Length: 279
Image (tube, one colour):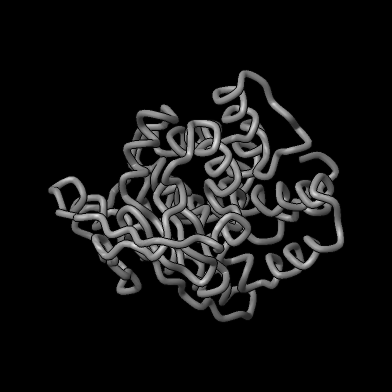
């Protein structure tokens, strides 16, 4: 992605080294960590797993050159999402309210509770902020075998997609169903919500390509990342088999499909995963 030397967003809040009040993940075994990742990775609602925790967690932090470059990169990507969604909303007669991206290290407090980097990147509708520990970039490359800067750009665009859903009222409608449905039934709506966020990430990529920001192989990097974080792929990696009724984000093929559909269309209208006959 062509990002160096370009405008960064002013809506970045740097909390690296500040830590959070609680420790989520401390003492978790491998299975517990995977459960956290499956549930919250790339946009799950962390409020169900956060809270009721106690203790403190302050992690010494010293920015490396790679961290500095990554911070600049995510700031530029965020700025690009601001430009794209401001334009898309204007075309629909709406006003886009820009979210804040919070950089943290180790743990962080949000309106959804307190999380550690084990949770992965997430969006909190309570304060309309994205939360990212830049160490996740290394996890994408090593744990998920999804290298490349545009893989990380996809992650940011997906979280911004959840912000778009909040502005449009979609997230609120889905979350309101939590108390009305069984866990299995609610999971189906959660999958549709996540796939729509993937679609919105693709919409952003469509416009980024139109602004000549993409380089050869960028879309493939995003598709690789989308595939790597599919529920079936994560479950098979962690336990050797997949349990479809427990899916909350969609399969690898579904995530790739909806990202690419958004990339091809570039608009809000074709992303109705809730009424789609075939996800």
